[in-house]
Length: 461
Ligand code: NAD
Ligand code: UDX
Image (cartoon, rainbow, N blue to C red):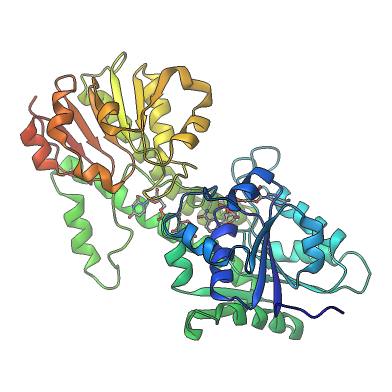
């Protein structure tokens, strides 16, 4: 046997928003391990090996460069790397199913199952398989049945280690997580496998922040964490509608209730709606699971979190139309931001997609600006490219428009020269602040008609 240079060989299948940053941080923190990330997408692997990573994430390139070529490797050779690995993290996408039974609700596990079968085919020795993707509760049992289906003496132990990072802050979240959760079977081999994963994180995460549980609790906790976070946003967004009717100010309400330590102040920022690849998908997944166990009331309760989010997006557009004299046909409207949140180029489930489509349905001409998300926006709007424009410079984007709508809370939008922007716009000029980040009083003084979320509007007309 050749001498092993590394004490553990870790493989991650799936080089996306989760696999890439998670493994880069493990490699940077643990030079004693060899960490390899594989993907079926060769272009993506090429980008991970370059100066222009496939995702925009502050601080990520520095972390990748710290370990790349030393103990962090990217590859398309999936089977060879499975054979060599001791521990395999699976971080493939698990989107909402778009076809057949459970379409629009349940998780599409086809990529997940393909991975299980590839592992089964390629493995020649015992492996620990780590569920990093977000999965319906009890998926580990299906995984176990697939990988242990060959009676060849190879033992696969499946553990759950859901990821809680948020995009835009992924590196900080991974370096200083609130907690790391590792679930396993309560058998001897299950507990041993769980300990192996604890040992990885213990290289940089304080031991009291690494928590262990049974495998089903771990799988379910991931869905529940996202459902609770999204529920807070829908709760405050529902109140924002009431504020607009009553002249209460949603920021003041959020501040007042957030001071109650039992409620807490985070995740109470009213907005045009939550986006991102996780919240809607994971709640739908929870709803589907609850329904499949006959728990209709539970399903209905969580479904309402999504219903309020849809309501909030629709309400935003309806407000735009009604204050712009009930017609926006032929009007130019600039969207400031397209990403689902600041500091990412990701546009999955971004409220800006729905808003753009609704504005275009009303025959408005939409000009989209965003510092990172224009390439993804072009893909999202492929079928209506002749009705939208893309302009990286916000000043140019606003030129000749009737209205600006803020879709993403990018810092740069707070400090633009709005006097200059106002001068180049059609009058009356409107601002719809879907993130409540702009200096509303100042804009009103300049001459804008200002419509925030959940706050009194300020209008000259
Ligand atoms: P992603 O789409 O960015 O990445 C998934 C990658 O898996 C893609 O590059 C794809 O090519 C690859 N892949 C698919 N099938 C494969 C196969 N058979 N073999 C090799 N590679 C394969 O997805 P993501 O955002 O990284 O999410 C991955 C998982 O993590 C999902 O389950 C998601 O719910 C969960 N998650 C995501 C986030 C987030 O912020 N994006 C946070 C926590 C958890
Ligand atoms: C989320 C979870 O936070 C993370 O733990 C999980 O691993 C993946 O899903 P992410 O979707 O990347 O992370 O971003 P997040 O910061 O949670 O924001 C999600 C959406 O909610 C964004 O559109 C954001 O703008 C919106 N949001 C967030 C609000 O509208 N108001 C808030 O107070 C907070």
